[in-house]
Image 1 (tube, rainbow, N blue to C red):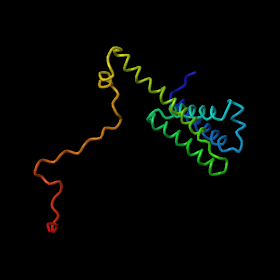
Image 2 (cartoon, rainbow, N blue to C red):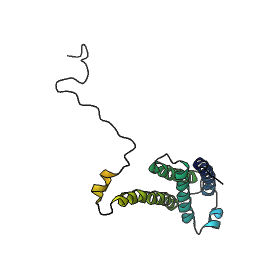
Image 3 (cartoon, helix red, strand yellow):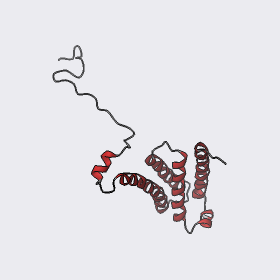
Length: 163
């Protein structure tokens, strides 16, 4: 049976939506009994949810930047904690910290891949030599406006403005 990459991306997106809705329900529920059934504590469940949602986001949206996806998951976790506070269930900053740590754990482990690719070329070179030779360039390169020639005004004079 052949599975295409696009199919895996779509399945990951569906799993991410289902996981996000389940995560939101368990977070906003009056009790956390469903969470305690799977993991030892609420903090471990928040860590696992942040980790899992970030992994699914990476697989579901491969063309998006990893840091943007990680920020989105952390922001969603913060918004759920705020919403939990607003509906009267109380807010636990340790739950948010656990979810954010789970999301950042995925970002940290994905960053190892770049380090490995740099050391694969020549393991004896320093980082100051390795990074300029990296084939990956920044996605966005901002170009500066050209400097005007000396003595040339930036804009034409405005008539009647020379008071």
